[in-house]
Image 1 (cartoon, rainbow, N blue to C red):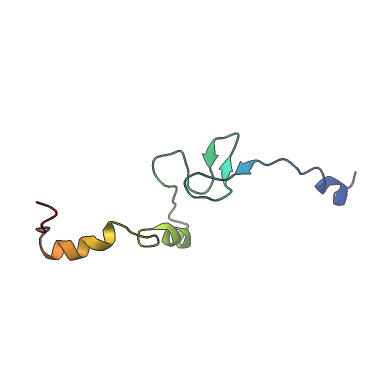
Image 2 (image 1 turned 90 degrees about the vertical axis):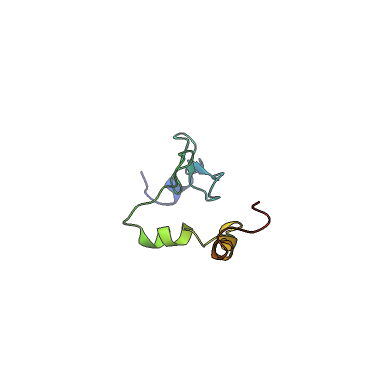
Length: 84
């Protein structure tokens, strides 16, 4: 029994596929759970021992479509004409 080339040829099944939420190839098909973000759990998977990873996905790393305007609107006490 060899440990090398012949054994590697038998590795043709995929245990993980693309995740709907994070887009990584970390969604385990049999477990129905993403190893990276924890989908389909409601909360994102994060641990305190993974400091860099929490920095990569925290607030401010994406587009912040709503949140980038909040500081400006809060300066006026949320009293813009759109709010009324």
